[in-house]
Amino acid sequence: MLKDQANSNKLNEVPQSMEVPPQGSLGLLAYGYKGLLAWRLARKNALKKEEGEDGKVV
Image 1 (cartoon, rainbow, N blue to C red):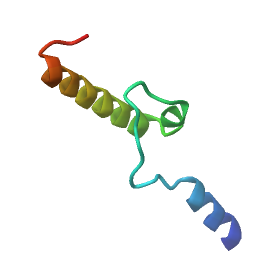
Image 2 (cartoon, rainbow, N blue to C red):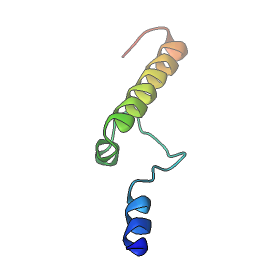
Image 3 (cartoon, one colour):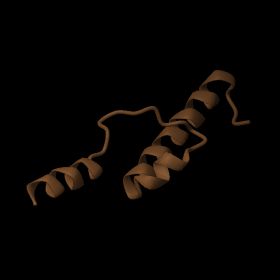
């Protein structure tokens, strides 16, 4: 019984840091709501960085 609980806890762990590409990834979808939030933040930061380089969004 304890062995099963230990395995299920490992499945529910989310990495503390990972590279989130602005275009998204299927792995982020697996994280559900938290993955969606991470992707939105990465996309927002990428757009801000693009705006800052040439003054307009492509």
